[in-house]
Amino acid sequence: MVKRVVWSPRAQIERKEILDFWFKRNKSKSYPRKLNLLFKEAINLIIDYPEIGKPTDLDNVRAKIIRDYIMFYESNEDELFILSIWDTRQNPENLEFKL
Image: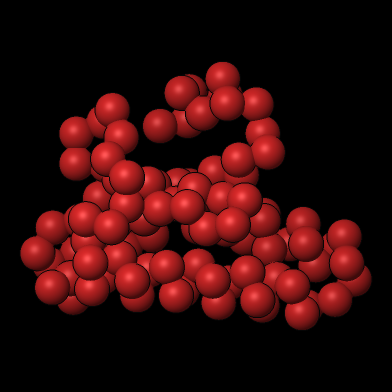
C-alpha cells in the first residue's frame, strides 16, 4: 500500500490554477472546495487500489478520471506520484506535449 503522496511541481500548479479559475468564475469557494475534495477522494481511492486508473501509453503511468479532469499518476509500494491534472475540455493535441 502507498504510504506517501508526492505532487509534481506541474501538478501542484495545475491544481492551483483549476481551483483559482473556479473561485474567480463563481466568486465563491464552494465549488473549488468540492472539486478539491473530489481530487482528495480520488487520491485515497488510488492509494487503496493503485491499478484503478486506466493504463496510458507511457510506462507505469495511469489515468484516473475525475469529472472533467484526468489525473495522471505513477505509483510504487511506497509512493504515489501525481504527475498532472488535465482538463478534458482542452484541445487533446496539447496533451501529448505536456506528458
